Length: 368
Image 1 (cartoon, helix red, strand yellow):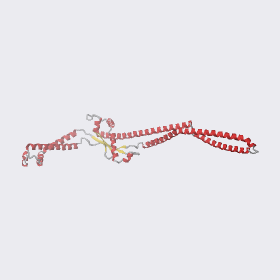
Image 2 (cartoon, helix red, strand yellow):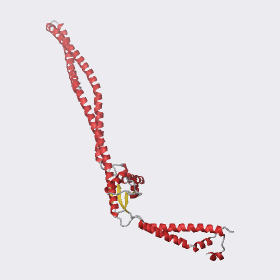
Image 3 (cartoon, rainbow, N blue to C red):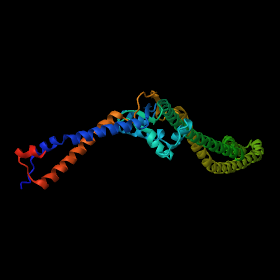
Image 4 (cartoon, helix red, strand yellow):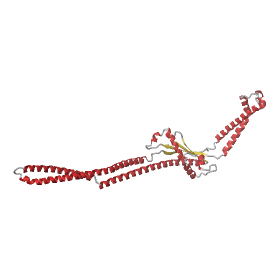
């Protein structure tokens, strides 16, 4: 017995049993058509959102057309597909949970589809429901709420940044005020400028006393020379007064020198204690200027930091149901039935050849 495959025999076998495939295809057509007509109709409406890049000094603005940036926009799918937003929409439109949808999660999988179109800035929100108007309203509501949710999120971020900047500016202002008050109080308690003025005035007086002392000493020397002469009685009488004046000037000069020295020591100590206060005022002023600059920048960038979402298409009321797709169901059922019948006939052909062996071509007609 020759068990080799004969394609002509196989084709002839299929030709003589074409009714099996025909019946299978007809039955599949009728069943798929009937089931498709029985199934409840569901309509799909789609709303579209465009995601505009930030308008501020955000570095992502320079990446607005890069594939990496466009891919990062997929994060906005989570805004539109959040459970809380979907639950609010279900409650707003009074959509009832049925036996096939025992929970919000399973209902969301049946009703909602959110897609960021590849290599674009467009986000599509599709809603599939039994009523076409309800589907369009549902999709439009989700799109508008997604825009609002995004705006609120960035507004909250702006408020947080602004509050933080204001807090830092306020703390810097308080630090500066504290440092300035401490410096002012120290200046009142231990003045430096007035002490420096006193020292300068004392130095001027000291210089004057020294000049007078030098003049007085010169006068004493002159009178001493005159007293040695025969007619120097007047000069001799004046010498004691002149020497007393020199002694007084020396005493006052020494006292003034000690006073100036003491005041210089006090001034040095006060300057040493004043220096940390001055440094604190300078650092506090620098911190306040930096905080004020940041506050101005944050205020200038408020509302321009994140992407801006805008509904560009609220969707239309669908006229044809998205499911069941009768033509598709019938075509799929037809080809499945055709494939199944071919598999069946192929298996039957194989079993038959094993059972009766090879049939000569001349006898094929008698074994129909």
